[in-house]
Image (tube, rainbow, N blue to C red):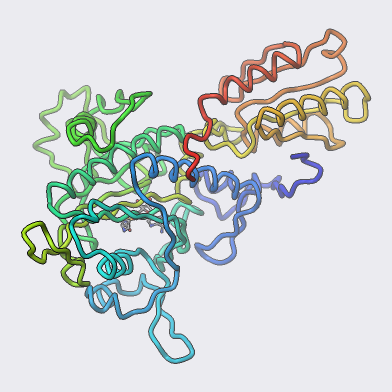
Length: 452
Ligand code: P5A
């Protein structure tokens, strides 16, 4: 993309309404525009990051054996009356009527709809196990939408639902989700800690929240510092292997890590004092196992191998896709702007032309641009007729992790400059070597799943 042709409405001033850094930077970097309270338009660059996050979520879901589909945003009230949640949800639910006076709602989640659907089609245990998911907009009429996309009213969620014959099988689905979520967040450059949580209105005995540590987080958390040494890394997981998933779950949940709702002072006191931590965290996902409650209420039964009709064991699992954009910025920025992790960056590499209009500099930039594109990468070329200082300020604000700077002086010696935004380290090298380095860096971040 050439910046002169792009739509990147950066703001010079710091918007007064933004209380936290991610909200400020998203507005300043021209990523979002508020449409009304808690409802945002995703401007081109914000939309690119959102889609990158969504793609990683899909890739890791599919890798875990979960099946993508799409359910509507608008739902009819009758299924919610069956589950008992139509009343229980209260004013957070956006209710509307169609022209025939039928009660409808903008879905805050999809347990009812999917349980009804599976109950319609699945009749035998032979169709199990089954996990379906979608990535779809939700609406929750939050009392205090705030912090930009962090707590919106309209927000994008990946929500998945497992259907199993037994509790044991459903708990494997729970473990599988926990493991696949760890991998999902790591690919976005985040460490999200699974914490035992309170099940709230969804219900059930088993639930973990995934929290990214950040001072501006809405949840208070308590944990054993050793948990932050854990990383999923490169390990290969066979998601059908019950023992393997269980082992990973044990590893990542055996140390103390709780939200304030489940915090236990006595247990916390058992941890050596120098390892006790209390901090704030952003909830970027939550998983639940809730048994047969929804299946019984909405009629999702199968015939087991003894010919008995039994209700399905279920759980649901959510990732806050749009919230993650803010969470990543909270975790990765400096005083000049965002620093995108390679896995989600909107453009792979910036190209800054220090002397627009200089034949040699222009030609070198064009050739770098084409070379990066030919390797399947997306550069952002600042080809505007602006001073170098302004171009650097824009690059620092929008936060591309790598930048190639091209100027007549370097070109005389046959070199350009490659800069890592994260470390601030710049190195001179030939344009060919710079391209090869950037290509190499992104090898580890290639899409992994053709099915997406
Ligand atoms: C699990 C999937 C559920 O709704 N039903 C389907 C279950 N869980 S949840 O914890 O309530 O939401 C899942 C994740 O969605 C994000 N989230 C939000 N993001 C932005 N704005 C909001 N108002 C908002 N509410 C929830 C969170 O990341 C949460 O973990």
